[in-house]
Image (cartoon, rainbow, N blue to C red; front, side):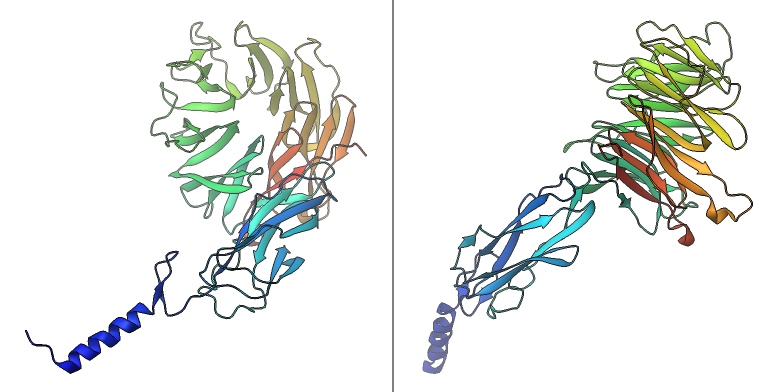
Length: 463
């Protein structure tokens, strides 16, 4: 093969040009000249603080390019407001600055934090500009003296049926109430991150206890219940945990799950303890043996104690080890109840406009004869430790229904103090509580036909 002198000269010229080109190993792109590349990293920012605390927000800026960067400025923002502007003299290739920090005065609520390096675009020769800003990071300030109402989920879709355990909040989400597909979401206040768990048709309710998630899917007039363990290697359940067919109400506390099961034709309460090997449901009541039909609803559990409504208003409880039920209230009207430890709390309708809240302590065994609270008609009732919470529905007559109020109240058992937590005309429903955290279904955006999930931290100090 003969190569002309002209072709040989062209080949040599191309080789010289190629040898002058430098390949950047970080992204595989080819650049004609070395260049700086500034990138910013956020540290693990503090998410628990009291209102007014001085919270450090630390971030790092690095020049990951292969050329030195001249002077530039970093900006840190909280809720799009500038908190810190820091000027740097420059960074050599591969150099990292770890002294960038900002002090922010904490305010209650969820806040979006982001950092942008080279804000004024002083470094003109950067390889990339799209990595100069961090992804906005949410921090949650809800401890101590915070009492603000915080949106947990506020989308164009319908969010409803919230529950809370520790720092985790779960709820259901639908595009609209006519849709059959329902999604379960989880938001962890400690991270803080939102996680989509599952989307399935006809999910009707969801509960959480620790790292265990329990939900119900409609099966005819009743439900199948599914258990999901949160974790990096978790697998979504394909089969329900109720082996005998659809169930009624259900609840979970730790490893113990209870539900109302009518597969024999007679409603009984069953318990499943998933902490043991090869667990099987164990009957807690035995109406089916005595052919005694006693309706059971609203079963709840705390530790080894189980409580439920029977015969549309009577209140019973038992211990899982003893399995001897005891009636503590005969109401003959529908009630709402909850349990925490050895304390059982319930609504007793007093009239069409008023209700009474009663408290029974299993440890004392004294059946209450007087209510602890006389309130307007209630929407939801929950107890956690020393705190009882409810939504107080006050109807404004004869003013328009838009002036009706649905405010959150709490009652401290040890002090006997009642406190109004909210004061507005927003419609609320489906309240849950864990420790000093409240969560509820909120209709402040009802004008666009939707419900959201809101939360509040109960201030530690009593007023």
